[in-house]
Length: 263
Image (cartoon, rainbow, N blue to C red; front, side, top):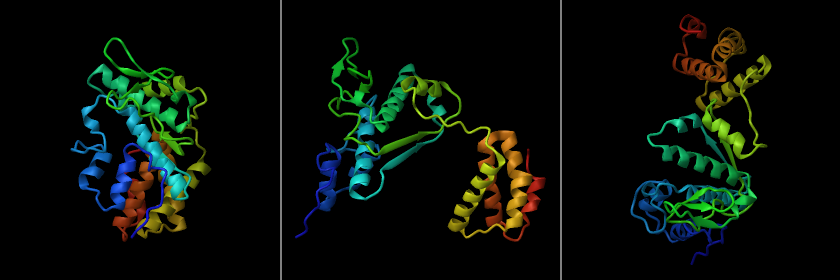
């Protein structure tokens, strides 16, 4: 008879039953699809797509997974990378924008272990929206008792990548001490180090090796020019395109790329 080790997820309202199912080999495809946010019939996991907001449920689930990784698998936690956050401005209705900002703010506060998330949830008189008494965050009407975090420390860190947009202004409003890293004004040595790291990781993955001569040529004649024209985005794209060319055209000299570049 197998015995199951206790985990920090046992007390979680959604993941606890899931852990038990996995242990008993009773988990189904529907269980996992529900955790991924798909609209499936499932008694244990919220059907996310049916609700106008499940921000508190989503943040709680991510912080629970992060706690599990930190406490049970001997890692520091979970780093969540969210790219192209500026696309949050694309919406059909105004409440989409409000819900998006609500989620990003709640996620930020969860990752920062904000004490304000220990709050009562009250229902507005007009419309019936449930909000946190201290934060004003919107809570799911179906799961108002689920906090934005599972336990502290959440061991969750979030990196939002975005260009200048209305979301970036909101980030400053939410938490003045929020770390903001601007990818501009990077010196050539730092860019060279970045290229070296990208090339090394790419080479280990695809068994591609750039001779030192080619690396120097690529950096001076292609990549630094790409950075000067289109900043870090263009630099990184040029790095990958160069490495892709070398991988798929091993007999061609990389210098031929100089004739095709558009900067």
